[in-house]
Image (cartoon, one colour):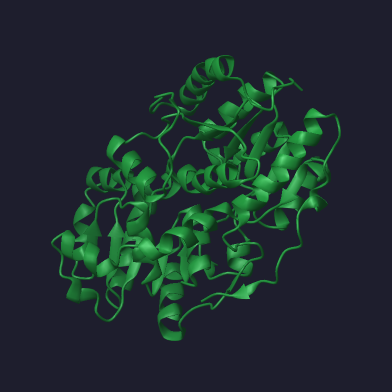
Length: 399
């Protein structure tokens, strides 16, 4: 590995919206650690909406990026290549004690590749999650990033089994918990109530007086093909007859509904349509909902932490703990299964679930404590076992 000065920063990468929620508490924990761990925040600009970026950074108390690569959109190959080309000069200019990447977007893999080839330690937060579906670009990014990483911080213990099957030595993987939940717990007191959101959008908040559900759909496999998207929307129409559904309509989904001539299917009295929402707004929507219907990975985790029943409209999930211990039900894309799951939740209240181990709001602090010791030992030629972390507390019931 390349030797770096202890004064060199740990470069932290954000590339897309979910990355912000994972990196914000890490940046704070590194600054609060004694001694502080110097950082450099790099925004690749993989997904870049200036207004949304500013809003998210403010909501999460995340400092402005030190560097913005402004990569923008493109094919997977073009985007990955552009991030690599623009990130390497950042290392040349600032140095790097390590490069910390989160999640599974193209920026995650691109920056891990650059750092690995420069012999700089790669730290992957949210390692070991697997959907076992290589048709998903994110799955390829997860697998390859984990193979490149020197430290693999995991959100659930099953991730260690996945890593072991792929030949990754156990001493490289460290169970720390879910850093997304750090952001959720810190932000929940500031969440915007659903009624306030609807009123601001000119919608009748009285329509949700007896409860509501929340819908998010954005995955290409669900929304890019009329023969898949149409039946899903029809299933949601059926559910909306029993429970008003607030739909935070993703631009990709809206564009495809318009392209397929289906946008009018959301005109029914059971739908309340909102544009994409900020983080605090989505927290407010989810925390007050009777159920959430989604194809988002992060929302599966957030609903489990909130104790809100979730219906995941996908054939697989890389977050099995949300099904096994949490409030999530995986139903696939069959309309009858979607409707049946929603009706069951409305009749019974859904799965109570429990809060998984180490989803306690202190994951970033555990990462900072472990990383400080690991870097000191690494730079001194020693090693730090994952057992250096404190024992996990007992899991608690979701509330």
